[in-house]
Structure formats: C-alpha cells, structure tokens
Amino acid sequence: MSEQDFAIVCSKIDEEKEFLNSVSQDIWKMPELLFKEFHAHAILTSALERYGFKVQKHYFMPTAFRAEYSSASDGGPTVAILLEYDALPEIGHACGHNLIAEAGLAASVAVKAAMEADLRLAGKLIVLGTPAEEGGGGKIRLIELGAFKGVDIALMAHPARMNAAAPPFLSIVRGTVEYKGKEAHASASPWKGRNALDAAVACYQNIALLRQHIKPSCKIHSVITKGGIIPNIIPAESCLKMFIRAPNKVELRELRTRVEACITSAATATGCEVTYSFADQDSYENLITNKVLGNLYQTYAERLGADFIKDVSEIPSSGSTDMGNVSHIIPSIHPLFSICPEATNHTREFTKASGAPEAQEPTLITAKAMAMTALTILRSQETLDEVKKEFSSDIQNSLQYQ
Image (cartoon, rainbow, N blue to C red; front, side, top):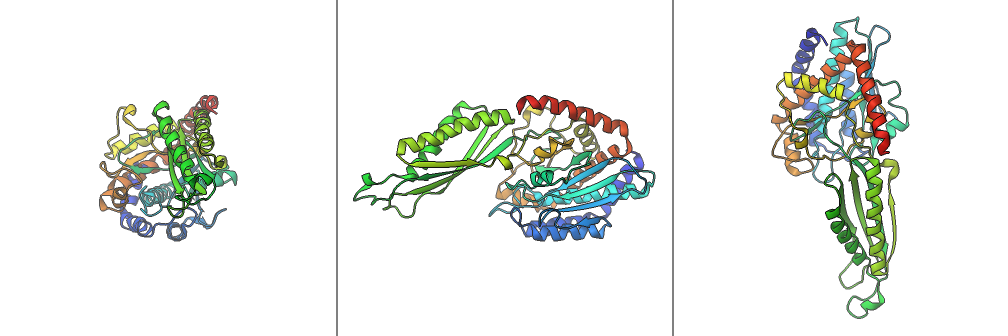
C-alpha cells in the first residue's frame, strides 16, 4: 500500500463519516432478527448503489446481497469485505452488528476510491451482505451456494470491549432436547405421572456438574424453554435449547458425547422418553486468523491510534461466528475493535454503546485499517503469496482437529 492510498482511504472515510453514521444509526434503531433483516438490506444496498457499486440484491437469500467493483485493468486479486446486520431478540444490537455493517461499508467505499484513483491497480472488490450470524449460519449458506468462489481473502471486524487482531472464536453446535412424560394430578395422584420438567431440570443439573470437569476453553449453555402449564398438572412435555462450544471440532465432538450422557441419564432417572438433535449442518467452525493479514491490519490500526492487547493470553475465549467457516476455506481476519471497555457483548449496555457517538471513531479507524489491508493485497502479489502460504500451513495444522 502506498502513502497515496493511505491518504485517499483516510480522506474518503472522513469525508463520508456523517452519512456512514446515519446508515449505522438507521440499522441500530430498527433491529431485525436473523433472516428478517429487510430494512438493513434496503439501507445497505441503497448506500452501495449511491457509491457506484454494481449491486445484486437478495443474493441467494432474501436478505443477503453482493456488490462489486472491478478495476479498469484486467486480472489482480479478488478481495471480499463482509457485512453483518442482524440483531438479538429483545435486546437489539447488543453485538454491534450495525457497526460491522458501517465499518464494512466504509472500508469498501475507501478501497473503491483508491482503485479509481490509480487505473493501474488491478483487482476486484466484493462486498458481501451476510445475514443471520446470530444462529442462522448465513455465511454457511453462502459458502454452500458458491458465493466465495474465486475470492482470495475475506475481511470483517467486530465491535467488543478490546482491540484484538486474532481473537479466539470457538466451534459451536446447537441442540434441542425434548422430554416426554405423562400428565397426572400433581396432588391427588402424582405417582401416576412422569415429570418431564424434572427430566429437564435433571439434565440442566447434570450439565452444571459436568462443567467442573471440562476445560476452561469449552463452554456449555442451556435454557429450559418449555416446562409445564400449571403447577397442579405433572408436566408431560419439556424442552431445552443448548449451545456446546470448544476450541475445535475434535474437542467439540468429545464434549458433545459427554453432554449426550447428561441428556439420556436424566430421562432414565425420571422415567421419561427423550429425543434430541444437534444442528450439525449449521455448526460453526473455530476462527483461523491469517497471521499475515492480521499483522497488516494491526499495524495500520495502531498507526491510526488503536491500542491492542500485547499479551494474547489476556484475550478471553470469545463466542462463535460463522466467519469461522469462511476462515477454513479462504484466508480471513475477524479482529475485534473496542467501542466500550466497560460493556460486554450481548448485554443492554452494549446495545447502548453500539449506538453511541463514542463508537464512531473506533469504527472508522477499523474501516480504514481494513481498507489499507485490502489495498496492500491488491498492490502486492508477494504479500498475497505469503498470505496463501500461511493459510495452507494453518489448514494443514487444523486437519488434526477435524
């Protein structure tokens, strides 16, 4: 990347910052759940058309989109910048996906401006709108449908309470457990019933006991979503939803086997029947951060004033993301950028932070760093070769954990 690129990226994003913030605010004020992000889809595709991108709305899915800008010169790398924009139930944009969309849009506009300023710069920029990160696996669907074919690198960034170029995102599988018992009068003849709520509670407690004997990097979360109608009827049906997370697929399978024992033993203890299933097709992979791309991003973000955690051991295990699946097929980064050190993701406090004016400066710094990372790849085949070499090594190493 040249100093001219640096100047263009910074000036273009600064020039557009009010409009970029308005896009983010528009999405933040109207949170939409997975696969229902119709307002965000309209806002973002309209913005991309305004900036001169060739836009495909409803790309493979009703709320996905693809926008492209190709250089005047033939050839060159293909860079994808990914946007997310779905929210969480009841608490809105508590994961700051409105800022992911803003940062991705800003970076894309800046890369396009730099490409237009130098007609010798060859390559293609793809902007992918990826719905349903919060449990729907939108990126998995896009992978399956061929959206990433021909893409050399993929970039996105996520708001958090810290700056981290290579955060540890875990593999995850989601499950549903249903217990069937038998109704009875809870006072007059409880012995005639089989309590499905007891089975769900026993399962929940079994998992709580299991947690003492799993690694700190593994996580199990569950909620009881159905547990009866009224107190004087023995509940005949109950249901739990659960997430199981681990650093890789091997450990995830091992942990799942132990969780399944918790599930079935609860049925045995209460005399209930049980059925359970795990959504393997929507399982998220752990994130593989490409070190070459991650180092580039961090270098540019630090130049712009971002302060990163120096000791990677201080970075806690994060959540999970379908960007992990992308990172297993294409060199990728998914850094975290700090918008509020006090608030954690998936809280009402973080919802407030993601819509606050104070979030704008770190979001735009992130956008600039992503744009500069993309332009470095577009300008340097040697750097792209290093990225691909690192990716091949990472994938070979990860095979032992599949």
